[in-house]
Length: 265
Image (tube, rainbow, N blue to C red; front, side, top):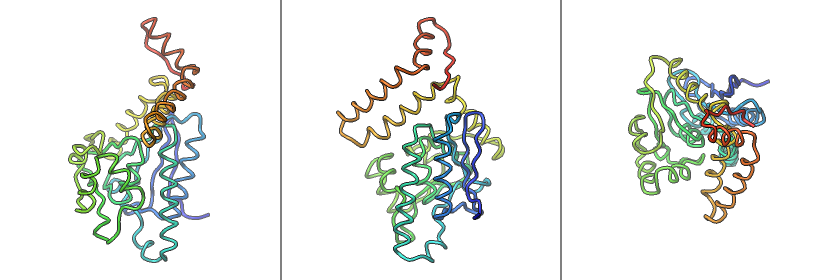
C-alpha cells in the first residue's frame, strides 16, 4: 500500500477530506487518485450531506502541483496528469452535495484551482495568500484555473490576475469575489470548529440537504448551457424535490407556521 496522502473522515453529516503531504500539501497523481476516491466515498455515503476540503497543518491549504514531480516527468505524463486532475475536480464539482474549502493556510496555484472547484471558500483571517502565479514558471493554471476564475470574477479581471501572477491576502480575495467568508480564529482548531458549525447548518434537520444539492447541480450544470436547457434542468430537479419527503415537511411546516425538521430524504 502506498503513502496516505489524503485523509478521509465522516462525522455528524460532514465528510472531511484532508490533503496531507507536508510541508505544502502539493499534489501528485497519487494524491489526486486518493482525493478522487475520497470524493466518491462521500458521494455514495447517504449519511454525508456536506464535504469539507482542507489542508493538513496550519500553513498551507495547498500550494498546487508538486513542482519536483513535474520537473521529473515527460510531457506525455504532464498532459495526462492535468487531464486526470481536471476529471477529479469536475467530479467534485458535479457531486450533488455542498462542498466547502476551508482555507487554513496559503492557497496558491493548483491549490486555488482545487478550492475553486468547491462551492464555497471560507478562509482563516491572516492565515495566508491566494493566487495563480503559474505565469512566473512559464506555464498557465492548468487544472481549471483559466476557466473557473474567469467564470468567477469575469474575463478581464481573471486575465489580469493570471498574467500579473499576483497573490492576494484573503480580504482582497473576498473583495474580488473569490473568498466567501473570513473567520477570525485563535488557532487552526478554532477555525475548523467554526467551519464545521457553519457546515452543520446545511445538514438535517436544519436544511433540506437534497434541495441544497439540487440547487448546486442546477447552477453548476445549468450555467454552461443555453438558458432554455438550464430552465429544463431546473424543472426536472424541482420535480424530483416536489416528490421528496423534505418538500412535504417544508411546505406543511410553512402552512402551520412551524420550524421544519428536515430528514435529508
